[in-house]
Length: 231
Image (cartoon, rainbow, N blue to C red; front, side, top):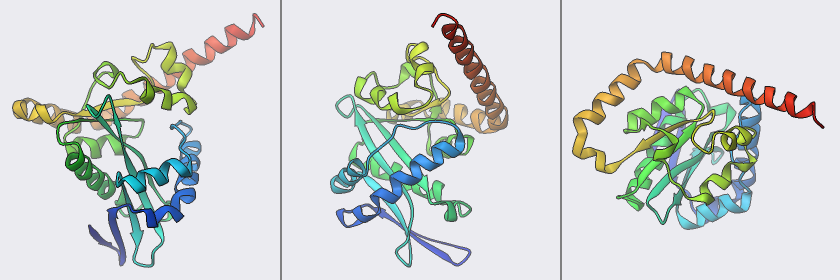
């Protein structure tokens, strides 16, 4: 896929082994971005990202000069019953061009091609990503609607909010769960109505997410304070 915005051209393609040279740059920016947001993501090593490139389960965005601009990859869980589009990241210098939306669309298409019968889900704290997901057909769901594959949830252990997830028995956290179900096409009218309502109330939903974050962090901090009294 080619994109040209404000005289900057991007090529968004399925990542290949030849793109391994960008793996450290990608993982470093993933970590830096999480720190800047004050939230957490499951940490990934350059070797893990390189494996995704070898498997053809990632998309990468490059400028016409060959500079890395963005990345996202696919993970499959529960023997392929569930698929997640993970690690979406855009280089800071290219974050004003709508590149995240373009990458999400390409990784979504790749996921549908490789796993046509799988449910595609995501966990995010960002309203912008929620909006993009909604445009692709995702709807907000409970954590109980996601995969129960323990390997997926182990990936949350490096997140700074992992203790909150554990305290809620993996039924809630700061992230919002969203799901695309190919079977929902049978109930297309209901799905469309749900997405329309979600987009209409996105600003209100954003405020609710911020409130949830505030409350959960306060509760977690209070628990830490009480625990420290008995040490």
